[in-house]
Image (cartoon, rainbow, N blue to C red; front, side, top):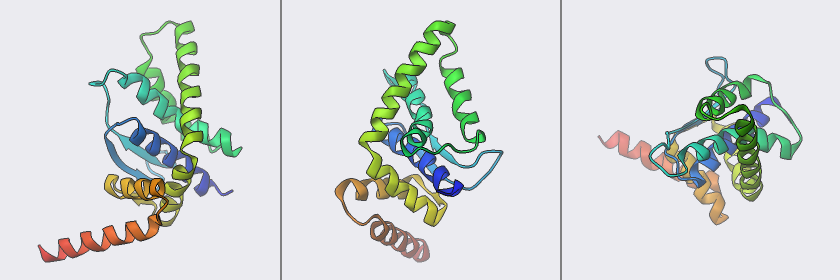
Length: 168
């Protein structure tokens, strides 16, 4: 299993869980930048009842997928995730922090297991295309959920988008 594949699984897990938990999605990429091996951007969920716990659950998704596939990526992959977890849970006591962090990791592990096929599909799309817009990632996720060929769905979307762009 290559580092690129592990990074794709890591970022795909973040993105699929953010999607499942209803967070606003941004692009997802496995292109190294700013000391990170990849990035999955999702919007803040502070306006939602479970916002902080959902964001922390999404942060744990990368580590959860790597535990499932039995491969750990470069420690740089976790730096951003851990910083977000620490920030979101900063008001908790040390003991509460450990308990909540573990509970949300286990939630991420369960969600990753439940969405493994979809995560693998998005990871394959990332390995092929390196970066996907939020719309493209949603197309891959929806196609995988339906059992459709995500590559055909993504190709059709990209062709339609290019045709629209040329007609403007």
